[in-house]
View 1 (tube, rainbow, N blue to C red):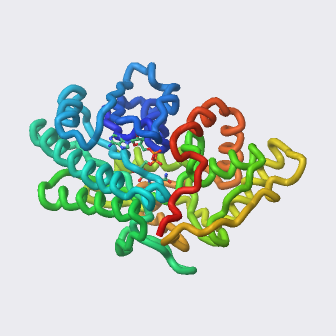
View 2 (cartoon, rainbow, N blue to C red):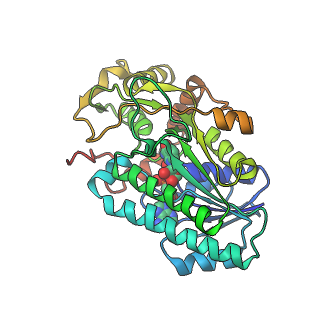
View 3 (tube, rainbow, N blue to C red):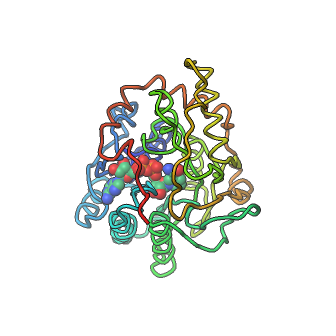
Length: 346
Ligand SMILES: NC(=O)c1ccc[n+]([C@@H]2O[C@H](COP(=O)([O-])OP(=O)(O)OC[C@H]3O[C@@H](n4cnc5c(N)ncnc54)[C@H](O)[C@@H]3O)[C@@H](O)[C@H]2O)c1
C-alpha cells in the first residue's frame, strides 16, 4: 500500500513512517518542516526505495492537489499539526490555522482526488487526534468513543474542530474516514519541549526539573511505537466511519512519572546526588486538565490490539535513547522557545 503521511518529520509521524516502511508499505511524507520537525527522525528509512519526501504545507490547496496527483497514494494518514499545548496558550492563531484550516484544505484535496480516482474501495482518510478533545476527567471514569467533546485548551479545541470536520466530510460527502484519539505518547525522537524529554534533559544538565502545580495531574502514557502499530492497524482493519480510542492503560500522576524517570537516570547515569533532588514546583498551566484516561476496549476487542511496552521497559528504553543521542537533541534545543517556560499567560 502507498500511504501519504502528513507530519512525518514529527515525533509520531516519523514513528508511523519507520513502522510502515518496515512493514513493506510505500510512504510519501508531506511535511512543511516547522520548528517541531526533524528529518533525522526518518533518516533510517529515507533511502528506502518506497520512501518519498515532499516539503509542502497542508494549508496550500494547490500543493496538496499536486502532491496527490504526482504520487497517487492509496490512502492518507493525517498527523500534521501544531501539537504543543503551552504554545497554543501563547499563540492560538497557528493552531486554528494549521489544525482546523489545514485539515479542511487537506480534506477537500483528498475528496477531489478520491472522486477523480473513481472512489477506490481501499481509500481512507485517517485523522490522528488526541484524547484531549474529551476534556478532563474526575477521579473516576474513562474516555470512550462516545464521550462528549469538551476541549479546554486552544490546542485541544483546534483538534476537536478538525475531528468534527473529518466526521462531517464522511457524513456529507461520503469520504471514507477513520479517526483515532490517543493518549499521551512518549519514546525516542520526542521534541525536547515535551514533558518527558524536558525532565531527562533538565536532569542531565543539573537544572531544576519543573513540575506544573502540585504534579497531581494524571496522564495515560503510551509508547509511540505502540501508537504507530495501532494506527496502521486501524488504517487497514478499522471500520469505515468509526473512531477508535488508543491508550496504554498506564495512568500516572506527573509527579510519579518524574520520580520514575529520575530513578531510571540514577541507575543509567548516576550523578553526585539523586536526580529527584532537582524537582521544583512551578506555577500551573492555565486550564490544566486534571486527568485523562482511555478506555481502549473497542480497539482491543475489534482489532485485537494491545500495547507491548510497559512503562518500566518503555521509559528505560527512552531514557537510554536520549543518553545515546545527544547530537539529536542538542541541535533541537537551539530552536526558538525550547527550554523556556511557555503558556503561563491567562
Ligand atoms: N504527542 C502526543 O502525545 C499526541 C497524542 C495524541 C495525538 N497526537 C496527535 O498526533 C499528531 C502528531 O503529533 P506529534 O507529537 O508527532 O507532533 P509534532 O509536533 O512532533 O509533529 C508535527 C509535524 O507536523 C508538521 N506540520 C505542522 N504544520 C504543518 C503544515 N501546515 N503542513 C505540513 N506539515 C506541518 C511539523 O513540521 C511536524 O513535523 C498531531 O496531530 C497530534 O495532535 C499527539
